View 1 (cartoon, helix red, strand yellow):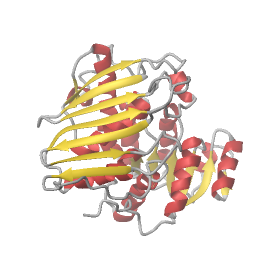
View 2 (cartoon, rainbow, N blue to C red):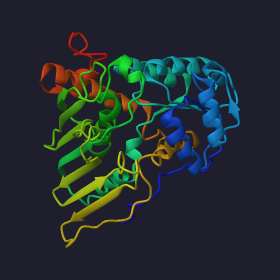
View 3 (cartoon, rainbow, N blue to C red):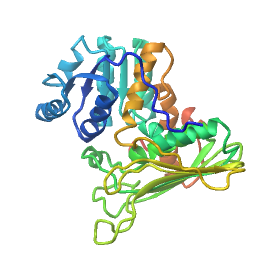
Length: 373
């Protein structure tokens, strides 16, 4: 069984990509991964033209637009890659839909400020005939993809218990302080989406949060722990620890993002190889099933950052090429957005919150449901 297959890529790689944004995630991940995959970014724009020019020079992008509107008006662009703060992303999606010239949009996660805005983005794109994909890139980490293959092939048997354990200090973005977001909408959203990718939709979530001592701006969701309940008895547990002890205050660090899946027939464990020293390293996998005498440890090629980003854009380009929905399409992502809102509500009300009550809107009238924490 080959667990080291590269992400599927389109035959046509020269679709003209226009990029909105030029921050860390664009320069260090999107563009590095796209060039390696052979994609064709042709234009870039940012809030600061100097930053866009710097990214364009580094990654060989021929055209720098003076602002977002200029790039949106560029009728030669076929695909938009939007990597901007969530409070301005919906406005850019609206503007692209109004122009109706691009065929596809890859939007950053979180897709919007809340589930209602995310639904609006999805509906706008569907009405405009634009394929919308969301940059839930953890799905395309090599170890996560290998775990999905093991599950789909039945190697592990029916899943019983799964965990994702993040002990890491991520890059916080400047816009987070104005929104009051730390972990749930920024990092946990990856892990919740990963559980959905592996196992489908849970019935509900228990979530508990506290502040991160290292983060100075007001927030509620610094350190997060949660349990996903599934109707078949499966339980998934996430620990998102952005403190990790005083790792920047004079204590040795123990940084990692690891996962574990226990099934009726086998056990699999992985490491995403991120937030370490060096900052990103190869992802790893170990697994064993009944009949094995030792753990299997296939060599995986690549890491979460930056290699997984070719997967999210690759899915969109494949969708445009084949007419099939991308794995990370916007309508599917609404359930991930709903699960994040359920986590906030669970933490606020200290109870199990079902996915259905968020998706159906029955929680919307409750004043404790936060659009921002």
